[in-house]
Length: 510
Image 1 (cartoon, rainbow, N blue to C red):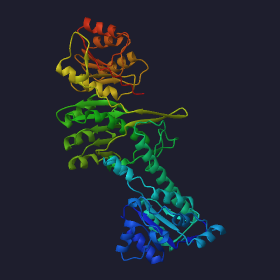
Image 2 (cartoon, rainbow, N blue to C red; image 1 turned 45 degrees about the horizontal axis):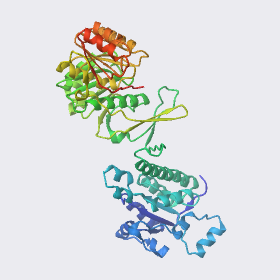
Image 3 (cartoon, rainbow, N blue to C red; image 1 turned 180 degrees about the vertical axis):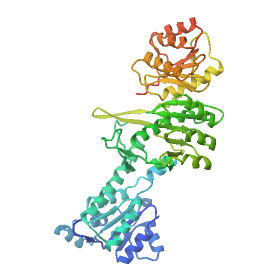
Image 4 (spheres, rainbow, N blue to C red; image 1 turned 90 degrees about the horizontal axis):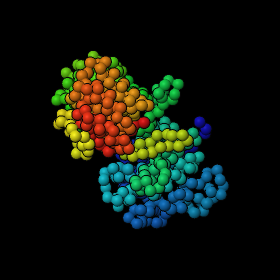
């Protein structure tokens, strides 16, 4: 741990005062001289404690409406001097610069100001200059200075100085320095991303300050981590810790259900990022029952999600199934009691949180970045290309199937009827294979495909898919279109009284 160094002075300059009182009282108890600025100085004085204004040290007032307070050689000299360097120590005495052993800074809330929808001028004023400089200086000189850069570290810091009477080791100061550079780099990343919202600068900056070590990655021999604020998006009510694969499935479930957010009660069951059951009904109970009927075999060990609060009747049915995770906007008290009957079953209440607008994934020796697929196919955006037009019920099913198709691995075909998933063919190298897989699966679970609809994530280069679908009972098709041979599929549909609509939007999901 190294020899401990006892602190004699501290500079405190914070935006939020929460949690600061016990620290400054401990400083007073330990005889640590406190220096401060503006509102922080007033706060310390309000506690009846002595504090030296920075202006007394610098002989210079706070100027430019508070934009310049601590940016002064006497402040930064007190932080950056090397105590084992005779020249530095001599200059402190020559220029009457106080040695500063501890620096506590809480930065202006830039990210929160942006998120609040504030004006550009308000946002610009929340770009901290003095605070970020203090953090970098104190962290750089961790050999002699301890930097506390976040309110989240107050408790740890208070315990540290309380147990050691104000003394800290080199290792402890280095740990706090690492935390400080984490804060400063994250802060600058947020500012850059605000200024680069239109991606005019071709650079990628990602920073997540909240992280969790997972049991393992996709497989037990792989390490796994999650970086993100999971608690801001979900309230975890019950169950074991989520795994790497659980999190991927939860992500797929949330993105799929976002398509049905304002629809009638809808329930989905997912396995390996794809829906194996989905239904929209008048009640969430019936939606669950019919979603399960889509593939009760694959549903075993699946991820369940609802767009409506789960009630007791639905919970009773869910409880009969072994499932990893259940997600909903809420659970009735009775439903919770029932579902908690399995100790490992994970229950999540989804909160209203904006999801990232950009998708990022590693690729080769770099990173691929793209906009999220925000287009949801809707009836008003369709092009009716065949003589026969879909009925009102078929149109509802086409949009239902298209929403699901968008969130299913390519190549994919989705078969649906009466707002229920009959079957899908997922992740196939051939669209014909995807269709044959879907037809086979639907028939294996006794679905009557007569009058069902088919959705495809991309165009049909040949009429073979519509022919197979027709022979299986499909009477209406939705697809993006765009093939130079679109007319071949259209002609087949016209010859066989099939309605086909085109969306003009491909939804590949690789």
